[in-house]
Length: 350
Image (cartoon, rainbow, N blue to C red; front, side, top):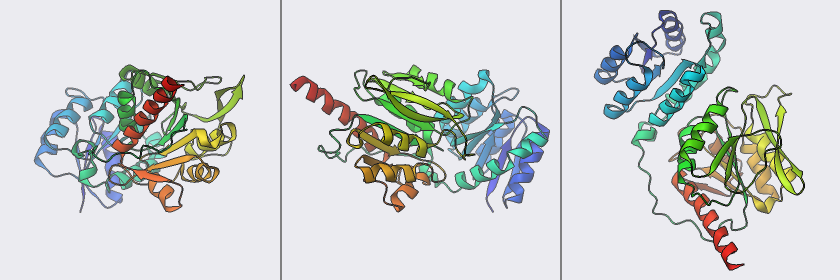
């Protein structure tokens, strides 16, 4: 039987989470503070740890650092959202946590409201092979990207879900300061997270990173992150492509939706100027939209199983034939950089 460690300083939260997880058929252990969590995590073999961030004594970040250094384990952050701990949540993802769930400010009934989300996340994360854990991956950059691949692409659209924040940080760090292609990203995140995440990406990137807003221009050297709670669409104004934010009117599972972004891009931009990339994530959002892009003549790429933290969205894209190419994540970064380098060569020769 798989074992799960629930770490939370709230006895009520531990009780609710323990019930949910035990009903899923897992053996549950608990820890009420950071010291106890570290001791148990390093002495026992847990298949998954749920971890609160705000705890007395050692907080979740300190706990995560020590666990990941000595015994990398599947970790889901389950913590309340505040402006103060938003950066800590992103730091936790960077340290190796797989994903996060926002815990309601009021426990009890409100915590029960997200029970289904907790079950879905745990079910997916606990299936992730140990070798796929962020700190156990060994990326190999030896395979060369086809030099003739996608030379005409200018607008890049990226979709990601579970496991995506770490990938997106790697992209932000890797792009050179003179990168010439505009990039738009939809990362499944709650409404109050995307602003903080955009600022975090901007702080580690040599290109500008902003949260999407109405009228934001897609221009060279800029990454635009879709705003949580709104769908990201596009329009044209004075020959420039601009962002348009739309409230959800269809009770969509994900807002923003990757499918909606891909399809809006196709209505606004010539397909031969589009590249669509679908990264790690639960479910199938983005797969059908990627298929529409491919059928129209855009370049489409899905992350391959060897590096996807959760092989859900890219798997669906590959199954339905939506991906022109499937690549491990390091080669996706390399492709992005090569496309930018190629455009600089074109400019220099013209």
